[in-house]
Image 1 (tube, rainbow over the protein chains, first blue to last red):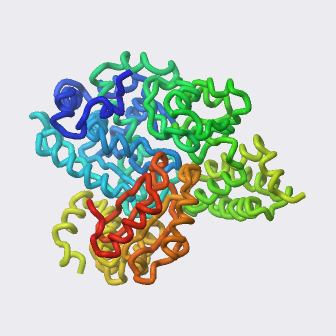
Image 2 (spheres, helix red, strand yellow):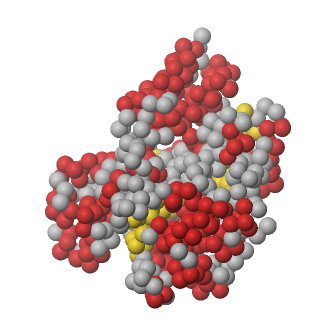
Length: 416
Length: 167
């Protein structure tokens, strides 16, 4: 099947504006601004069933319809802070198919009446930020951005903004704080951003991949999009495949494709043809799926079905763990990550990740006891459900599920 | 003064945000201030405070929160190797150990000539191209993917010769 998001894999030089236009690009935006009412655009996206691709899977059109029309101006912010260990899809989109992403952001801006929109990139995407600035300048030069577009009353400007190294800024309210020039610490909610967002104004935040779907939906219609994927999770998704596979990379597949197809048909199988031991379907914040039975690999990867394996699909950053990996090592890694990235606002997360890290170091270093494993589980469970944002819970997912589902890995390395 | 040295850049940065969002400019201004010395000096903090109406303490809190800002001088180039889970599953820790050996420094240390600081960092969104690292230096930030220790030592030799990062 031809790609819908990673179209550059079939169309060379798609990151050039003339090539993008020759392939139907920017027509959907022009058509929306000149021929459609903003709420009609939102309705098409709503009817397509598109869900946010950043991890939470919230219906995109519904989110747009929540914008508070009694409070102006409105803003749109693209979340390009891609930082979840195992996720590297937005970067490929922005490097190779930047106009489709920007056009999606522009269509969304029109739909909610935003006249200024921001792309918040993680600071490490320094070169990519400069590249997008060039692309935005080209769109301005060709009359797709600026004042009174296509002779209508609608005006739009796009800006890039670089973060400076903080995973937490991928959380949408921390992102807004950061964009406002503050430390990236999540806000208390409600109010949610569509009511009170950037500079206190109604704001819609979506992931890069989510926006990149929008021009294709507008061009081909909601029914075309809905025909792909599953009824609950329509459309296509980019699966970032990493870990112990022969061919890691981004693979665009309909939602509902199986783990087996991803790992073996696309990923070339496991390194040294080892056995899959566990799967982390949503990056470092995943619950670990136990692969003790080959049948698990035939599970369809969509938001609802992955839940039946007691895990979340999230951003579909699928990390493959084979039987060469011991999970005491693995959780020491994930806990170290979350300890480093905790913003420090909520005590259970700030202190809990610190104490978990002390214990995982001890266990992995061979100095742990059985009681340490129980203590670790206890600390992790005390963090859960007690923090303002999801990071606290995320830090515990691999810990709790590794201990509960792979206890033997820990018993092997601890003293009685 | 930052605004005297880079008038065009400062003006361009400030123009991106609405008047009520002036403070948003603090992060791009910090990157600008860091460009030459590789860290943010006290006087740059005062300059930026004046431009965006923030106190020095407030600016120091921003510098401390975000990992890409530095408040002290270290190597001219920072080599920041991702050793996070997905990269570690593909040999990043072994790569880091060998690189330390070849370079003769430990993680976190700077070479005696002051050119290279070697650091371990968290995920850089390049999990399929491990081992990988980014360099942070006078030319900004650049990714180096699918790296070997030999290729890295060649790059380091070029940086030490003052060739700089190629765009």
